[in-house]
Image (tube, rainbow, N blue to C red; front, side, top):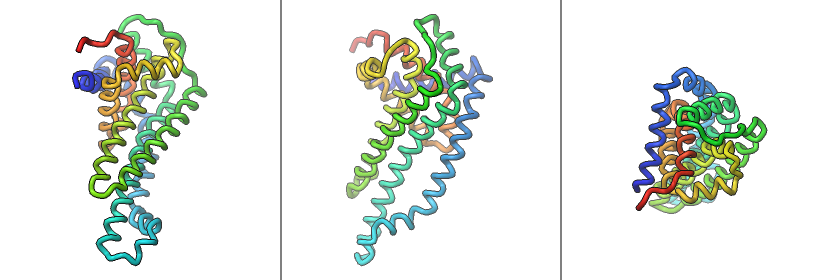
Length: 245
């Protein structure tokens, strides 16, 4: 648990970067706001049409007793909302990193300079960012499907789906946000994955903290620049020796 909370604290260090470079961090809000508005419109549309969607996908329940039809449709609606939240978080991260790549590269490089010299190479480039975003979206779809299926479990499905969705989405977000700083050190995807698996609790702590902030209204927009900065600190910490148990 100490490593988990240490990972959560790294997001706080990202927010602290506002004091050092407020102008640059403020620029990071622009792409996040653009993408956030578009996705918010989609969430509002889903919420408005959800009752009709749940009825449309459960015609078999039309002849059931009223209580059972309500229970089944509520479970399906909950599963759909859980899956939608996963997709929104993943889509927001992927699209924002692509749209705001020049801004976020300036942020993570500035964090690197503040932390001291290291073996930093070049950035990822626009098309590599697009490819990474697509791969993140594909993995996010898999997580969303898993969360939706778990959400169908009677009684406890909603809670289990939420916990699973937050944890797995947090891992994907931490992976993606830290990838630029790690790839700039010459680490390929396999090497990056090995580093993350070696410090699972810390990575998960950072990712879960970021994901929970994303769930707050307008929290994703406000958190994104700090998440990029915090993920850069995370990337450095992954290469340090693990603390003694």
